Image 1: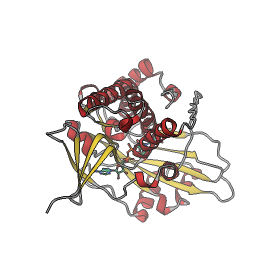
Image 2: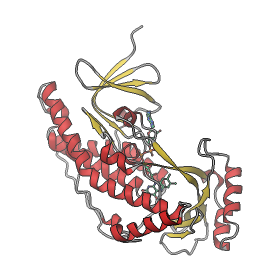
Image 3: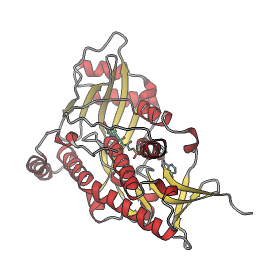
Image 4: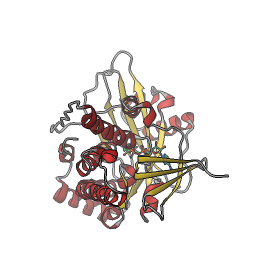
Length: 356
Ligand SMILES: Cc1cc2nc3c(=O)[nH]c(=O)nc-3n(C[C@H](O)[C@H](O)[C@H](O)COP(=O)(O)OP(=O)(O)OC[C@H]3O[C@@H](n4cnc5c(N)ncnc54)[C@H](O)[C@@H]3O)c2cc1C
């Protein structure tokens, strides 16, 4: 029996922050080109931190996409290059095949697309983080700023209000067993968080105690080495990666999601520059089209590398300075942070990735 085959111009694998934002950026550019609508993207240059619920962001991105451009429940299991056209072929879990001119892997830390580009194993830190949301119906009276308590040798906790009633908090936890899956049972996670926070200020204990059990998550901290960004393959042919699939880093700077949004803007901008009339409007042969897409993706990778490499280095040094059992390593990484990254400066939040 012949397997089902689909053909698309651009396929984005993964429907997280990066995948949805990339799809939306490409649609917005398409709208401007074909429907002559206007578009203005403004970026803020202020040094500030804002917290929002990931699910709200995902929902807003999803709601703004045309319904027929999203396919739910489609797991990509493998990818290879079509020997006759050199364009990518994606294999879906249900046995079907998708042929595409461009494939963008936004499939997160275990990216199938990233693996197909070459080696780049994930490193696991010996600690993990429990996160939760606490609702204060009468208001929390906390300042709108990010508070973090750091202790050498793992233990840290922190919080940041999302709005007048809702507060996001986290508690770090040493996680000695690197090979088992993170537990998910909310009751167990609550006990774990309470046990970890018990010697800390009452305000923090009450916050954890009063949190919504369904909001509790335990995440093991993984990162891809910054060397992967220097020496690894981030593009092959007309296929590339974005978001965590390209630059998974520990959550020490809280920038992974922001970088994913920047990737989306830069990627869409480079594709639009190379093909101002879109893929279907380019009216060139497959050979020329492939060359143009490759140039666009190469420019995207080149543009993103310095930005993501800098943050990946900073995040890794911060991780070592907090959690390394070696005092020398902790001091050395602190010194490097001060010399090269301005210590605790939030300068990295002032980055402007340019307009769409
Ligand atoms: C504890 C913690 C705290 C964090 N805090 C912050 C913060 O404060 N600020 C910030 O900016 N970032 C933060 N981050 C980082 C941020 O969450 C990630 O960088 C961001 O979610 C990456 O988005 P993504 O779309 O690239 O990947 P993901 O969110 O991982 O999405 C990948 C998507 O691809 C899908 N997928 C995977 N494989 C396949 C496949 N084979 N086929 C089809 N679909 C597939 C998945 O189901 C998922 O929907 C934090 C991360 C952690 C762990």
